[in-house]
Every structure is written in structure tokens, then in C-alpha cells.
Length: 257
Image 1: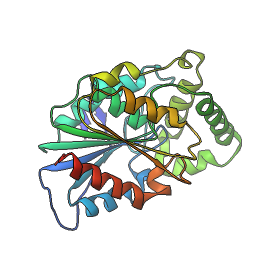
Image 2 (image 1 turned 135 degrees about the horizontal axis):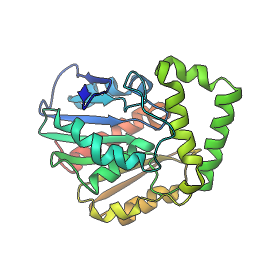
Image 3 (image 1 turned 90 degrees about the vertical axis):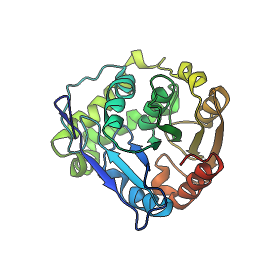
Image 4 (image 1 turned 120 degrees about the vertical axis):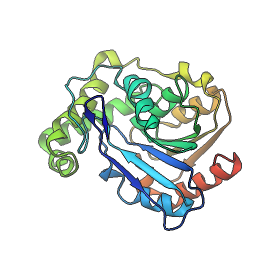
């Protein structure tokens, strides 16, 4: 997908059989993610729900165009308010549910609370942040060491290729910048009117349950809270069946498609 000269790697996962042809999930990956790092979750979600799942890699990730680093500290706002609307406009669906993991969840919330596409009927957040926390900074510091001295760089290079340094340092340098300590997007929550499913693992190494409680208590619409036991930051990998079951119930309860 070429948008204003930026190539965005995009894959549409189609179900074995359709229940809803005019609706789709759009997946927004984490700060080190891309299309391929969703693994088999998109296809499993498509098959379970009987609808398309669209996954794309933001610029600087996967097979998408590179970007300059360091990133602006407002990089998630830029994705939510400038690039996500353009991407959604290329999709021919009447109903869209955003599913965002970590950074992707924060981007989905900013979008829903600012310039939401009118076809977006609901949002599912997976380990999203609405403010910075010491536990997040500590884990990102550990990731920096693993990238520089451990096996994280070659592991990520398999998925990001030439974008591996852009993907890692764009994320890592932003979150570890002293100016990012006070990063907060709670102001967007009261402006959200569509239903939210807010999911987090109780063993998340990048955030606490306070993130979930802030989102659920401050959103302007309905919100469902789900804490999954013995689950870490990558919920779609640690607890895929629980997650897909919760999404199915959320879609049915609020008649989102």
C-alpha cells in the first residue's frame, strides 16, 4: 500500500467461510512488531470470526518504508491522527474494529479519541499504555541491553530486515528519552464514544493493571476489562484462545458488526 510515497506492508487474512463480508479487524502492532510478528493470530481470528483481518506494518517496520530516527516523541500521535486515517480510507468495509497491541493499542485509543473514522465501531486494546510507568522504562532498558549485547537484534532482523535498527531505536530511544517520562494520553479517553475491550496479562513486564483501570474508568463510552492470568505482554501469543473468545463475546455483546 503506497500512501504519499510511503510503502506500507499490508496483508489481508480471509476466513475459511464468511459470516460478515462488510466488516474487518485492523491490527495495529506493538513498538517492535510488524505484520509477520503477529504470527498465526490474524488467520485464527479471521477463521473464528468469519471476517477479514487486515494487518499492516507502520513505516520503519517490517517490509514498509524506512523512517528517520530519532523519532519525534509524538510519533504515536502522528500515526493515529495522520497515517491511520489514510490507511483506513483505502479499505472498503462498512464496519471496522481496531485491535492494537502495546504502542498499537495506544495509537488506536488516540485515533478513537480524536479523528476516528466513522466506520470504526469498536476498539480492542492489548497491553496498551496511556501513561509511562517505571516498570515500562525498566523493561525497555533491558531490551536495549539485549539488542546491543544479546540475541535480540538478529531475532528482530528476521522480521524487519533492513529496518531492524530503525524499528528498534525509533521505539527504544523515544521511550527512554527523559522527555517521555511524562508521556500521557488520558486526555483522549473521555472523547471516546465507541465500546472498548481492554485486555492485559497479569504478568505483563511492560505495564501494570493501573493502565487498564485508567482506560476503563475514563473512557466516554462502554468498556470491558479483562485481566488474563499467567499472561505476559504478548497476549496474542500467550493466551490466543482466551483472547479470541473474549473478542467474540465483545463483538456479540455490542453488535459491532
